[in-house]
Image (cartoon, rainbow, N blue to C red; front, top):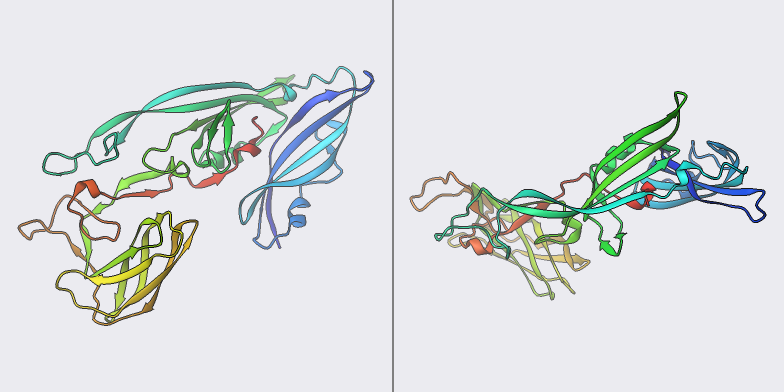
Length: 368
């Protein structure tokens, strides 16, 4: 159980000063830490990690002490966010702490020109012969949330991680509910405010862009999306998923010494209420028989596929795609989700891969 690193993300006054008698004032401050730890670290290991000092006074208020330490988010098995609350007395005339000022918020649209390979209905852009066409663009309009506020301390190094992330939590912006994955931090600016050459606090401006999911789900709004195509195609063995109340699952078989050794799931499908059946067949003229497989589902999607019978004489392989003259193609051909060739452009399959490296909770940035 090892704590690898503890980094302060931000700190500021988090509520207005309270004074029941008009003579003494009570102030509340907050901070957030990013804690990287081994997977077996306990909650107490994380909350009491070196650098998170229970009972210490707040960095700029001698009589404000730590009253609560809580793990507010676990973005990953070895990453936790710890938030701390300080409460204590302040003196009259100090209640106008600049870090307690309301944030300045702008919410506006921004349009960019992006390459597209489908029409407005989601079908591939083709000519009358079904050849896929390229070079088209489309104006894409996103909503932008710009927040400016003051912090007593802030980490630009940790902000870099967020600039390579999408939100893992739901964000409500003036009634617009943006689901996890639809927001991406675009920029994070830090301006120190000086007095007599000494930094008093930091003015921070963060810009988050929200994107509507187009032909995908919200959690993949910022993913790469591209046609499944290539110069090679899979032949010899076919794999089909059927039943289970859902659709879309696909995969291909791996063979060795004539037997099927594995089923690789290339599309998990959606909407399954029970595990679909897997049928292993062969392409025209190819040998092979007797192989069987089963699968499991999770959240309505195929999670795993397992070979239960290897069968005999199978030969699943990749071969170069050729044209009508039996010569190798020089332009990628469309492929099905199982790697076999697709001749109808309307049935084109799109693959999706993450564009950002992290999925992180934006609520812990202390912006709102």
